[in-house]
Length: 325
Image (cartoon, rainbow, N blue to C red; front, side, top):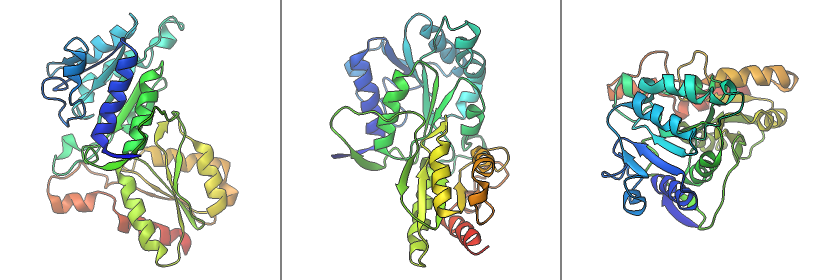
């Protein structure tokens, strides 16, 4: 096992797939000459040339439409957004075209495309650049939504996403690109729609995904000092969601806390809560607790931002609440 950065895992996944399939190409702002805004496409222009690694104007609606159209002539594009906040400019193409081509063509056209880039907050980037849209895209039939939390998962899931014949939203984090983790030298993929138990425990289940899951690990370490054993499930794929792994964990621990970096109204945690209460309600020994951001736009002030974001203390308090209810 090598230890590499998250950005390197992303680059390896794209490069390996592009070497094996000439129909795959990458396009987006600064992906070529600048080696990517976060250096996740470093060296790819030199290897694959400007016809397959394409710098675009600041026109998300335009290049999203070009990429989607190209799937109908046999291509498999990867579209990088500098941030998913910018995807809102092109969301009509994603929701009304990419997600619906297969159904509206009666199955005559597939849409094998990956939209990838960072989601959620990344420090002092203020309200319009700190938003998590996983639940927005997951709400749309026809889209698959992946949010990895580490380099190993990122590489395996991105390779699967590129090979998938349906549109995939692949969401990263600006604050994870420098994270390091073990990644095998050889070929591997991770199936879409399969969650992973990152830490086994007996007393309470914590479900999370993406960079905010780090707060769950910090909380679990602290709670272990008090004799509380936490099981941590990383969803990895938000849609399709692996409900069964959550159900089985709740049957074991009888308690559930959900940690998500998103506004509290109508989010992924809300859906998990509904599914658990509908399917394994009798196993719950306490009401489900969900932890989200404050119900406001993200503040710019670092003091306010720290209060706005979920943290390990929030997780500790939620776990103790379900433990001692």
